Length: 335
Image: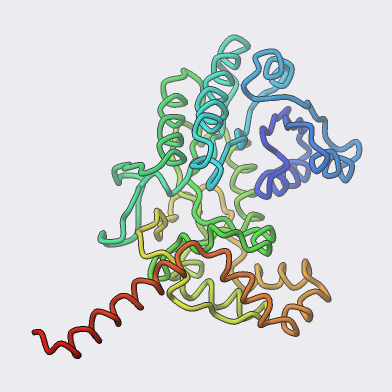
């Protein structure tokens, strides 16, 4: 089977490619030609074919989809870039997906598309009883989630054979870079983790099983991967040797993550294998001897990390102002 993977050199894409190769598929990847992507391609040697191109360019997509039986569509602008550069995000996410669908229809309506969506489409569900199900309404809250909802709709009305996978919080060793987005998720947020390896299995199985058609499935790690953000951050930072950061460094604004009912998706795709402990082992291998340095340099690393938080100064300022007001009231005796 000939399968095109758009945006295939991201964390989920790489595991998806590996799973497809295990199943003797002919894999073609469409990616932007960058130094980082060229380096990744060299690791695959002759196992895959690469089309260097832009999802928004008609001629590039036409070359990519030629002679393909299915497409796994992963190419997307994600936060924080989707919020910082909304025009770029719209062009890639919405117009890129529209361009892909239009060209697929001209080749053959028998080509199936598997789309990577997100739990973010449910919006702020903090006050709702978990878990989320595919019957829950979608309430997008930012560019990224609005784009996901729009693309889902474009795919549903495309006339193509499709499957939409809504992913939870994807675990990848790229998190070792400790993106400032970490601070955006409040510590009391319910999160469901999904290891990038397991997500790759889900995409590979979804594209190959023709009995799974025109379905929306929720992709998370299951009950063992359901926790609160506080537990996740504490375990990862403690494992690295940095230790938990103060509550004030995290946002208090609701974030779009939650636990999900993955019973149906697991029964169909059989992808849940790894949990947080496996991810910690991945971090251990990835960091190697550098993990010892993080323990030795703990005060400096913590200082650097906290400097990345846009909330710490604001929250501490609010506390200080509050204390000042209290002290003022005590001194003046006002009630």
